[in-house]
Length: 437
Image (cartoon, rainbow, N blue to C red; front, side, top):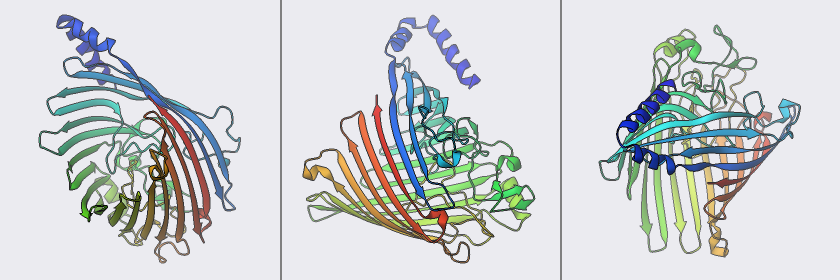
């Protein structure tokens, strides 16, 4: 961040010698940005787990300048608060509304310079990132945020090329800290639990901080996204001495008659442990290599406003596989899996798992409620009995979304999870209202 500040003041000094009035115009065109958000989460859990009831309020407040010779700046402060309503027992507080110690926090989450010329853009500093594996993903109040150097180019029609080096991450998908920016290797969330660096212990251990093995490492990210009638994207994420991850998906829409639109999608990604982390796993006779594959078929009726989707995913791996899926905030799977605990003799709960989902999405404008959507779905998560016995999960999901205008948004979600494993048998209600400016 010191480098970014230095670059900014060099630009300011240069402007005092060349085009001071243009810089003043850019500063005068500075506009506020941000959002305010109110949330309530209730998780009715099965004993011995305690039910959680959590209220949170907060948001983002910042500013972005106008453009000066292709250069812009943006900064934003993020905050989450409990307004004194948080339960004194941390076990009764939602795990993701606040910091990892379940206390409210605030941070300077955005602070970047952006330079744009022709079809290319370079952004340096703290920023939001949206890709399949590295993603901001704002499912509570403060999202995942990253320190990065990101270059994008759109010279090729319908195509965006992205090259980035991401040094640090903060947010709810980080392992070490939510409120502090820590290295990408430290924030990698794997399924490997250890009581020390010599003992694998799924029941009593804690999730391994890989930076203890690899040192503090960043992620080299590259991607190509093509968007036309056919949509396709391919990404690579390389974290030295930790992981090498490759992602691909393709979506092909086509019409069936004049009122039915179908979309066929396929996806896949592969994860490979590398370098120091690979050597570390080998000392225990285990591995970190696996794949995910999936397909999804959707049918939208424009006459009645109903979209029906069928999706299927499966993970590879075996009893000796450690997994790190969605490890920096990205959850690209067509069928979302709740957080899975490695337990007893298991290294990973999702290795060799299969999951399917049927979803019905109804556009409420058909009954006079514009910009409102109702979604209902059922998912079945089939875990391999040799890896995680008696733990299959059935999930019934209801979701209501409304954009009452361009700024004000409502969201209500209710999930009922059923499983013979008490860790996954719960009912969760999530309510949120946000105002974006």
